[in-house]
Length: 331
Image 1: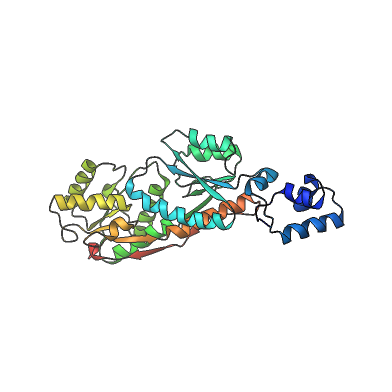
Image 2 (image 1 turned 120 degrees about the vertical axis):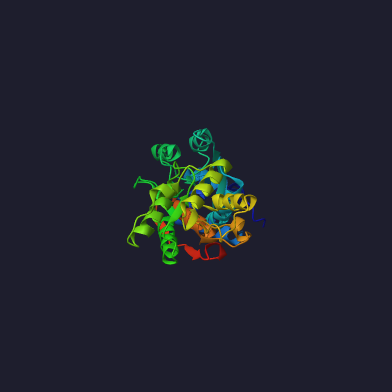
């Protein structure tokens, strides 16, 4: 028989009501033992599979997971989100769920509210955390299961992330061990928790080497080419041993600016990045950086959310999911 037979088909074939068939399948409600066995045997023989929609209605579930992207991402951020999404998709698909993607534009969380209030998803993954995290605050109040990629100060929120603090600490310590005692640090928005985490790792790398980072060589909220050019000039004039960028986007912009100003890496300026991507892999010279497995991260966060949705215990995790790769830019 056709594998897409319905409850109505089963009821008609066995001469019972659709309610009786439904009760026999779900195990809820009163159904005689003989009748139940006859129904279950029939659907097994005829390869009956209840639809996801029907199961969802029966359990008040959608079998959808919401993945929230920040609307202010740059083109260079896409590889991170894409690789995470592959990992998420592989995991949720195996568990019988699908992904619904939505975006948050600035402080406007109306899209997030819409999919939650209209019960379009069973849980949510936030792909970025903020210092003042309005999306996380809303989700916590709504009561829907959710997990963040990235860390936040609220211990009640389940957080899954790469161990960025440890990765940045390790890279900083390695560079200091190579003789680069005076490192400058270039970072983006101080509203992003990842910026705060990477800064802490940078400082810790100095502390474990018995000294402190030079605060005058730390530049945050650098968000345009004019500021980058200014920082490069200040770093070179200061006699710093090198410049560490917090991510690949900033590192790429520094490399392009140095080329246009005929500043040679690593001869005139040593360069490293706390995050690697395909953007840097194609750069010449090769850039010393921290390489993460975003696919593994996506899989881990999706699995954690499904555990929450299905009532299993889930805890915050930091993945030792990185490798420090030394290349020509710091020689």
